[in-house]
Amino acid sequence: MPSHNQVQHGIRANLLQMLQQLVQVFLVGLTIGMTRTVVPGLAETEFGLAKQAFLSLSLFVVIFGLVKAAINLLAGHMSDQYGRRRLLIAGWLFAIPVPLLIFYAQSWWWIIWAMVFLGINQGLCWSMALNSKLDLAHAHQKGLVNGFNEFSGYAAVGIAGWATAALAEHYGPREAILGFGLIVIGLGLLLALWKVVDTRPWARLHQQNHQDTLKEATSPKTLPFKTMMIFASLKQPQLVALNQAGLVEKFIDALVWIFMPVYLLNQAQSLVQASAIIAIYGVVWGASQLITGPLSDQWGRRGLIVGGFWLCAFASLGFVWVETPLAWSMLAAMMGFGMAMLYPTLGAAVADVSEPKSRAGILGIYRFWRDFGYAIGALLMGGIAFYTESVIWPFYFVGTMMLLSGLWVFIALKKPPYTATSS
Image (cartoon, rainbow, N blue to C red; front, side, top):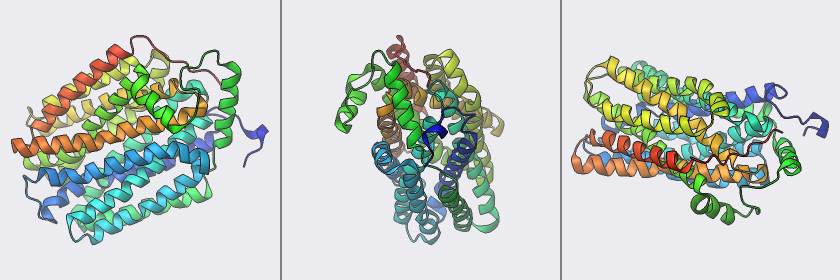
């Protein structure tokens, strides 16, 4: 545990630990990314799901979203009790069964169980890596920190999706996930045990500085979970808008995870070709956040959030109207850049209206609604695809929802409520 004199805020002052946390979220991104293209491909070839079994195909993302959302809801409060580092280590331990279940799977239900463990891993590890970086940084660096965090994580998602597809071509899909997954999870656990420190002392210093400088609080005065949940989900207009935006933006990611691979494979693209197109989405999303995260600190959150939603909407609507790998790649890049505009900015905007003492809890509530979007989006898209007997209509549905969600944010954030203070 660092002494009081060693606890200083700022990226530069905590650079080595910041880099360790970025490596952690990169490895977490690799862990989920390995399931992105190969697992939907396994649905028909290994488990006999017919091409029209859209609800069954969507179920693995529904379960993942429900589990991750629930863990996100608890992770903020648990981290205050048990520490960020302990939950990070626990998250890696829960990841170990994922590649094993997929490798030995006898039915699609084994994949569903793998998604339960993956949801726990992602909810704990991703949340702790982000909260730790926010603890270490200055308050006015939240957008930059979110940008670097999401760059590291989602670039890894894209890289892992392509890498496991390429490995699957040579060694088989199950073998690819087993080898890749155990190496990544083992490295993440090892670094969490040996290199990561707990950042609660930095969080306490944030709260002390906040109490010294704050004139008027804009989030709940009390810390009980029920109070924060009601406040963030129903009462505070900006947080309500941001929470619904987080939920709806996951529709895009669920679309890319479930239906984009199926659509591209139906268009006579190979697994590697489809993975390359989907990887463009993830890599552009990740890399662009190095720009959009810091820009949100300078330009404000509203324009980037709304612009990102509408850019994703047009890319989703147009994806099924084009017919060439180049056009699909360009639209995947557009979708990725739109996500880069809105994704770190939403997290930073939520942090803006949260006191340091309740920030982890408020962010946990936001991440609950955000990742609940996986479940809601996958369920709705699966139902739409089932009743229309087409993978095209989910693209139209997601595009429409992104347009409407962006409009809600545009209206709700007309009067910026942001109260970020330096510390």
